[in-house]
Image (cartoon, rainbow, N blue to C red; front, side):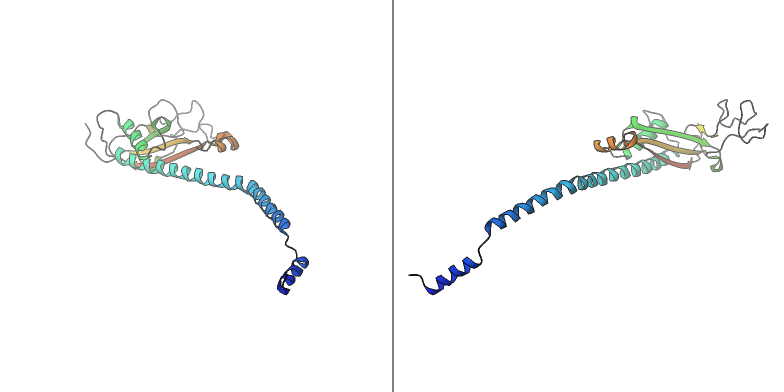
Length: 208
């Protein structure tokens, strides 16, 4: 025979029923909402992570390119030539070695120009402006500072120079994104032209 307490429990259950079906429905709704949120936010978050990775790698490459050309110029100013290659080849290899595998020798553009003084860097060869138009025109007299037989907008002479010369080292490199996604969404395949330049004076080594 049921006790009074059991009767009381039954009465309460009849007034406040347990809604297990409703709880299950709410649980499914929550899981569905989480799936939709992930579908919306997940790709954006992944794109952000890949972007951070790509930007970090880009900045690392730019940094090693700049430090590499500085190291190469420190070698270049000494006038040393090691067995097995020219000074230019050795300078290029120093840049590659300093890059830590991020770039290869055949991907580097190296230009070296020599000047008599720092003030002449990037300056055009002097000419007589016969028609006073402010620009060089074919046939006008000019001073062939680099000895190549033609007027140049930059008077620098190609090469790594002699003792006491001013030398500008300019390294260029085309950066292509590592993540294939960025090659498709950015113009030109996401390729960026990197440059690093340094100007130094060669040491006064004894000429041969």
